[in-house]
Image (cartoon, rainbow, N blue to C red; front, side):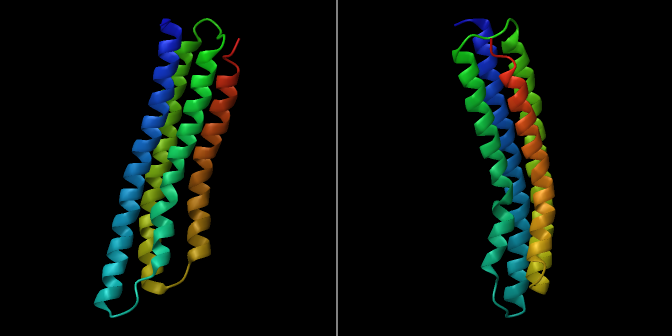
Length: 155
């Protein structure tokens, strides 16, 4: 296998892995907040809102963004690439995956706080999801701009 192709595939896998790592951490943070909110509801003999799972699941979408980038990057390695494109894709994959993963981590932290607030008050779903959406937008921007950069690496 050509080193250019190997580096490109490594970058693609790094992008998915780092995005997925962020999603795992983010969903863990959000789940901890939701579980704490449910505990408070049970302690007060109130129904535990199932809706809190929306906050828990929010950071998982960043894994999908990493997957989209991975498939695009692997697609570029299957065709003709510009010289040095493999190293460029490795660097792009690491930084894009890290950025997308950080978005998921902070979205999970905000999701955990949202779950706590919503569980206590029963209000705020729209505002909380809007705030999570702003954090999500960072990951979308990273994905789109990286797709543009990767597209320029094809010969």
